[in-house]
Length: 176
Image (cartoon, rainbow, N blue to C red; front, side, top):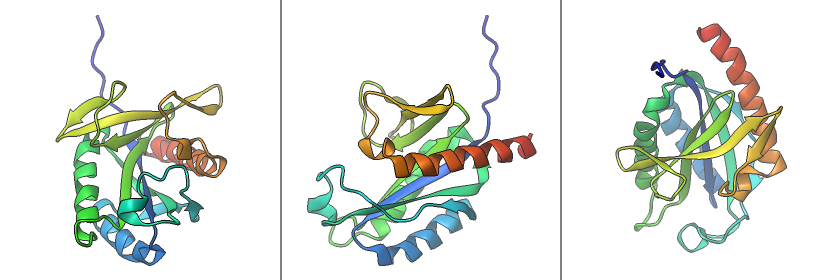
């Protein structure tokens, strides 16, 4: 028999992309009000892996990622996604998003994103939100999966996620 065990707290990671870098200050203000202080932030990275968002958000999209100091419950991911969706909506103009905010969490063994889109590999976690297993950490490296978004396989994104994972390990040790 398998005995239930409490899940570990996770490191909240949020990626944003936009064509309007000036929106970052407002987004950061909203995110820190909701989730606390940021302890790691990437530089701007081109977001040119798909043209899917260009009609809504414009061209020359760029991404920035951040990790938050406070660890979160894995079970809070659907509520976190609802809050980031609300921020996106607040910043929208004429029904078009100006920023896309993708929350997820890091554990030692995996990186998970939240999405409102169902698919075969996504698990429903409540509030119309699904968990997407995006990367696994195996034999000292992140491994992508057949459905991993290309931007999460990019060297600059993975370099940031390695920093997040290392910080998470330190945070989790002091948390226990």
